[in-house]
Image (cartoon, rainbow, N blue to C red; front, top):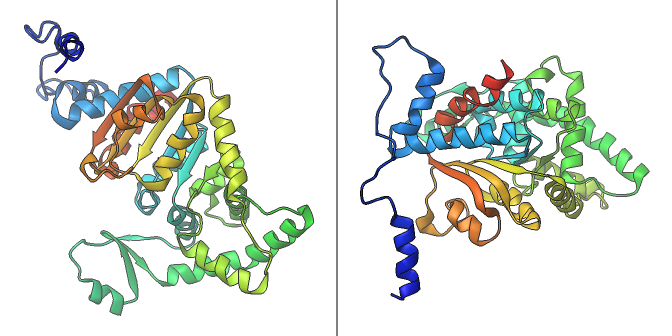
Length: 335
């Protein structure tokens, strides 16, 4: 070990000899009259992942107070779950500025406006559900007829979109395609339940870097059999999200889960030398060296988060903690 490394570690450990000024580990006192704000604030002093959750809430509140451009990324199971309604709330009230999502989240937002998903159980055997024509997303049960309704909804849409494509002479990008789907939701009585609808109404772009990885991809395959020049342009969406990042005076990320949706917003913000604020909520860990598990310290090395950026990683499943985060940040400031 060099003297330089020894000096750096000594700087990092300064103050640890007495721990003077460090907050005391302490939980909420339920003997007092319950106060939700104080209860949530107490998470910072609980230790373990509760402290990370408390830090994440503080960082998101900082994003809001600094008028940051906020990018939300999530995997499709967030739309499968009740977090869909919470994401819809953020989009409806223009509290976030861009979404990156996987393909299943696009189609499931529409499907749930046509027919609901239901709460099932994790331990029901797959063969039993298969015989009943029920698909599953963990303990969320989805009868396969939901996709019949989805196909009926999109059949006319694809024909009309192709006419628009031919008239304008260039393919739609995934975000433009999703905008048109949001517009198509106008004809549903349940439209106000939809994330896509409110994104269309408020002109909030929804990016889907893996656009064909779902039922929509199957439908596009069928379209290509009859319309040989039917394509989607992913390159212009890449320019669009990078331009959005470059135009942001301050930029913040809220990432629910990992994968391509997470990396898409991180990668775009390399062009501005990284996010100023980043909050991760995930069960993925770094030991498999995947981007899903990659944490803030890894992102800093790639210029995805600024060296001095505020960041927290909450090691938790997002359906547990995201409602608490929103209740303590966006919703609190909106009420």
